[in-house]
Image (cartoon, rainbow, N blue to C red; front, side, top):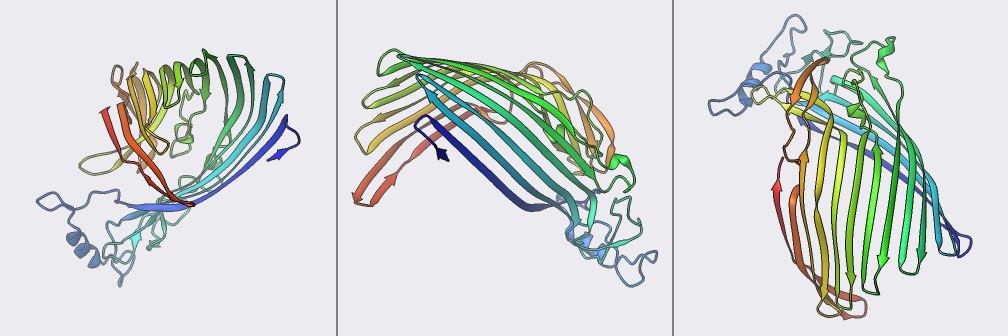
Length: 397
């Protein structure tokens, strides 16, 4: 942060992140089951440990089924540079931001369940009869990349009881994907190449202070949001058809009160979300085989009221509370496309009859209230206690 004067400040932020993790998943084919429906690992182990397949080895046992371990490794770098200039009753804020993200996603052989080796990696660049051992890559191996660059501008005006602002931004987000398993090294389809989506934001707000304690405000916004990489390319590098930016139009009207012992905020909101895209995995209940679904073109309407407040009983004791009540519905049916994880190149269309259903994933009724106690025992040592009660309702999956 560099402040050259009382009127001009420059701020720069650099963000770095590295992650490495994963988890165990079942094989493509179904495990043996006990009479009660549980996986019969003993039976799988007994079979694998005595399964001598002379086609591949006369000494080692071949695992018919094995556990897999999925891996995700990412690197992320981002920066934000902004400048703020004040003159008279106006604040000008402008800047630039960007990010670059890369991720490795692959699967390796985990527990061989009694066997010594496994056959069948799924890599077209590898001998299909090659013996595979724990840690060898199987099923899929792909790298994905994201880059974005944006600029933003905001102007704020303060005069007497009136505060207004206007925020504008523009960005370009691009995606690229490399598939190491489904295409040979010389196949041009191995890499998708960069596909970019321009986005924008327009937001404006107005606040009026009736007096020292009461104010009212209005915010309206129009956003264009780029789809995620998983909504752009399938697991076989094929671009999904008719992929669009998500579009969001929102407005909120609110009231605030700030008294000696009481603080209160209350607002009503409405958000219209168009061309929403999302991606999810469906597991067949019997075989536990996975389908990856991509759905886009969904339209949703969110509307409701929310509020929060605090009442200070003393300098060290306060009662806090918040609530939110909303109605969130899908407005239309959409068509989704699924891909079986073992057959990533085959599209399976499905009608998602969601029109009129509630939007899931978060509660539409929320309430939280509690007591905050903060007491300083002596200089440098404080005691803090904050019991809270929360309620969530109308929470759909």
